[in-house]
Image (cartoon, rainbow over all chains, first blue to last red):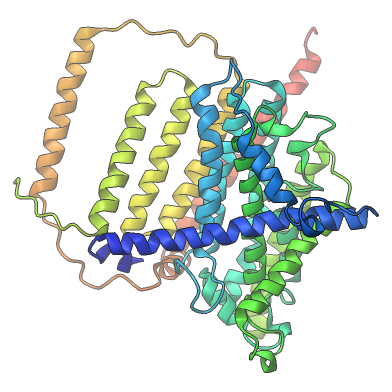
Length: 335
Length: 179
């Protein structure tokens, strides 16, 4: 980190950092556009429908059209809303989600910030988004929005605990929290990847991560049948688009983290295949995780509110703690 | 005392920005009348302080600060505020004499702090910071400071169980009551 501070400040350096940030933003926006398209297509196929197929060839421009519609829509602010916070909330939700992407290593030398706390950085910043969601719900001055925001915050705080604890096992095996070191530690055949020795941790991580993302089966904050649409009922136009963008950027971040922490990052499944560039392996595993998330969304029904908290505290948390003890025993016995 | 020598490197700009943000957050927290706004500006101060920790190469402390103070404490405060009714956020009447005295006190405190900081010398630490400071922090916590660490965790568990016990008792009293 220190190298950033000691540089003399010049427009050139600022320009380089700005270009890097814009490049990530472009990649993420392309990802989000086609993730939404892909999600609608996959769910369409699973439900024996065609999905979007009218706008552009194969419906490829559907999301672009949707976003354009959101951008030119009238921007409404409820008369009784807390205006300043209502405007602030979408930005406050988006900024941390984008900052999270700074630490993700896509390849051995393709990373923006090499931070030695790695995963902790993600968890810390995603907490700020939770505040934004509560604030968005509260400032709308709407019962449904407030309830949605409250549910969302309670859920995200509860599931953060097993999410962090499920990764402790990996930190113990790698003896580091640095994401790059974690990937380097998984070099070799695919049974050296963390998801086999840490299978309990992986299971807890996946469940807690889906819940953190507020996706089905844990999408109670947006349960249409109980709350009108969750914390963003009163939002329209580009403010609503920002909340949606935030949600999908977190899908991107979680898929990247699952790839790095459990599926060996840019390592090929067998070392003989390393003539294929690491970025491609990373993209393949990443795409698999994203598909998995959509698959679950199309398959599973939603949990009830009273089952949700019990799941986090009575099932996932003990499992994650048991995983830590088992990992400690494993390291003690087999080195 | 006033011979500032400022190097215009990244550290200076980052420190300046974060310091201003922290102060602005703190001042706004005092001045806002709505409680939710106060809680948010406090969160803003916490984040700025975390940034200063990063500047001091204490990444672990910085992100734990964000995780605990912003992710948990602020949300808990906001939750508490939203659960309670608070229509009566009326204005307190101003007391000019008290405010004047407070201002004089503040200026004195600032003078003392400024003098102390400017006249203090900051010697270079004997040995350099370890490269992976998170790891050395963890090692110290589980070797030299293991017993205090465990004691603190026991204390936290006791407080936690106490909170659960207090929260659990309420409905039983209601059932026994006249309603």
